[in-house]
Every structure is written in C-alpha cells, then in structure tokens.
Image (cartoon, rainbow, N blue to C red):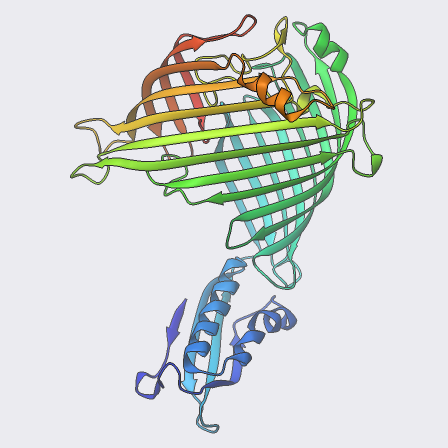
Length: 441
C-alpha cells in the first residue's frame, strides 16, 4: 500500500478534518456494496489523526481479505469544502484462480498438498477452494470449502465444507480409517488469539488389519459422530518451528452427540502451553542457549454409557513428539499390537537448546531434554481427586540429548533417549529415536 498527501497542506493531528469525497478505481469483480461496508467508517472521522488512522485501517482490512494485489491511497485537500479531504483508492485485483502445491508436515508424517482456489467469487471476498493431500500416514485426503466474510470483516469468516480422508494408524494401532464429513465452521481473529468453531457430521469406517487385536476388531466397522469443536490459539512465539522467545497457549474442546445424533456422546477438552526464553546470547545473532518448557493435558468424559467414545477419539501418549524415549502410543494399556489409549493424560517437558560452536549459522541445534507424562482411563462419575491421583501415580519419564535440524516447514530430531521410568505393558524405545514434525513437547 502506498499513501500520498500534500505535506504543505497537512493540518495538525487534532485539527478538524472530514472526508468530503471517496472514489474507488480499478475494480472489475468486487461489489460496490462490499466496498461500502469496508470503507464506511472513513466518513465518521472528525480530525486529521482520525482520518489518517481510518484510511490505514480500511486499507489494512482490504489487504487482509486477500483479493487485491495492490492498494494505493491518495489524499488531497478539497478545493471546494474547507477542512475536508478527498480520498482516491486505486486498487488492483488479484487473479480469480490460484493453484498451489506444497510439502506439509504433521506428527511423524510428510504430505504432498495441492490446492485450487477461486477468490472473490461473487465480488464480496468469497472463496471456493479444493485441497488434496497424500502422505505416508494420510493415504489420501481432500476438502472443498465455500467461505465468505461475515459483515465484510476480514477477522470473521464463515465456511461450509465437505471432506474425506483415508488414514493409516498402524504406527499406533493396526487399522485404517476411511472418513467423510460435512459441516459449517466460523473462523475469527481477536486481540487475544485465533478462534475456530466447527459443527460437523462425520461418518467413519474402521478397517482392521491382519495384525489387529480383538479390541480393534471389535471397534471396526462404521460409526457416525455429530460434534461441535472449538479451538483457541494464542501464539506469541518468535518462530513457530525453532522459537527462542515467547509463549503459546492452545485450548481445544469437542462436544459429540449434538442433538442426540451419532454413535458417540462425550465431551473432550485439551490444553497445551509453551514458554521459551533465551538464557545466553552470543556475539552472532544465531548463537544462543534457549530454555524451552512445554506441557499439555486432556480429559475425555463419556456423557452416555450407551454411546461410548470410539477408539479414534481417545488420547494416545508416547513418541518422539510427545514423551520421547517411547514408541508412538507406547504409554498406557495395550491389547497385543495395539494401544488402547485413554481418556485422561498429561505430559510435560523441558529442553535446553544450544547453537553448535562454529556452526551457529547452520540450521542445526543441539539439545538436552527431560520428558514426563501419564495416560489413564476415566469413567463417568469418577471424582476429580481420583482422576488426579491416577494421573500422578507412576508417571513415565525419560531424558536424553540430540540434534535438531530445522526448516521453515518442520524440524527433524535425532535423539539418544533413556527411558527412566515405565510400567509393564509400555513400549520404551531406548537409544536413537527420530522425530519429524512441527509441535514437539
């Protein structure tokens, strides 16, 4: 965005000033009613300072809608009406269609993602997008979504969607899940963080594998779920992959069995937090020692004993991205080759991350870590004290050292792990362990 004004005629910040005339040029697809809704606050300004701030706010709002490639603002003192200004907006719209392919990373999973998007579909910053991905665990996934801003605001958006996926859970349990869902969601941005509220109706088909246990075979077959999910994320880290300062808070809630629909009825809540602080800063910008502390906890409570939570909805703990030194899902009860998961868990970790002398300019760090956590079953009617007591009994712990290779997409850890405390039935993994992902404990 570029702003131009006549400096010789610019009044003092508190001097009276109003917008006399506003003209918009360069739009071909964007509706006038949409622009009027965004630009209307300009006419409420009464001082020079308010006018300038309103212009900046309106331009920023248009920019966040992601439908304009270029926004130029011209201000000129009115020659006919005193103490007023004429504003001219020169806009250049982005192309309607966009195509993208990108490599994505999740928990010990690499995906190839592709998308086709159409922006400003009906002239009011609406969008239609279809995305497709495949990887080593998510064999195939797609989503098509039609979205639009609410009341012209770039900070609140409503979408309707359909999606489907085929996922291989064999790193934790020997089954494949085929799912499809449809619903509506709202996304919002506030001064405190990002919100997402979703109502979805899902159909899942769990297919047991030859190595599956009796528990997984009993859970196989088709099931449905009607749920409301809310996510809140407050992220003030200086870097999402390799932070050296700041904090992160995430709160995630789900209510299944909405309208007494579906085969499951439960409430599920999870909270996660991180804190990062630089303890030592060397002469080189990247030469530093960072203390990173993270913790998370969750609780799933069945609301109707006749509609218990499905195996896919339970918590699983252990692995290179949670409690290191254990196999993925290697903490908690098991049936043969399969982890049974749990309804309540906690995990915490602390790491000292350091640049490597002579290699501070390279995307590689060394770290030492300590992890702890526990996973238990929770039954309806259990007291809070009993649940806390169960979670505090026999926590699993591990420690180790390793190397971190980081990229803006993800980070890879190569760690030497020492499981310090584990229970019968757990699957500790001492020695070298590799992890690929974004959010590590």
